[in-house]
Length: 118
Length: 114
Image (cartoon, rainbow over all chains, first blue to last red; front, side, top):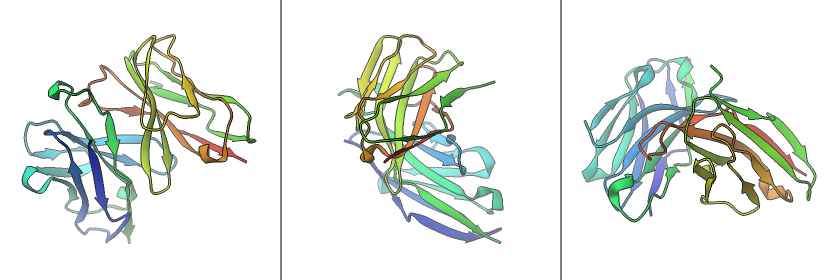
């Protein structure tokens, strides 16, 4: 079974500071990994995804994430936070369909609420 | 460009009542799914469909029913609402259903069961 752990239910950073949101995964096979963002009163939007190509993945709005197999991590970063980045961020994991044993679907972490201090 | 449309946006039910949450997409996506979002729990998969006439259970299917008679629509039925079903419900779709594909989400239905 696959799982995702997001460290910190709330993260607060100052405007202009580095954003780091942590995600660790557990999977029996090399997984697909995703970061989704949810703005208030909206559905989720895909920020970026890793599907076994380059380990450093660039997404929308200046975010990027690095897949580190040895650390089973997929942390999300942005060099300089903007007020508009305040939202809920979800890390998610899925198993490639060709990895055998059937698909477990997309498993989401519990989310990290990013707060931007002016 | 409507994308994934959910109705209603808000609903209040009494325990034991039934209702249907509607979900429609206009992108000709094969895969559709329903998630519930609870505080501190993230999103959990209720049911999903990989095409018209095909549905399957997710992580938390009890108390919910689905059908997929057309590619566009994927309604979620609550047969006898319970307070434990108070949640925000999201419908999502993707083109081919591969687990590497981007999900498109609706804006959600906030359901309260009294």
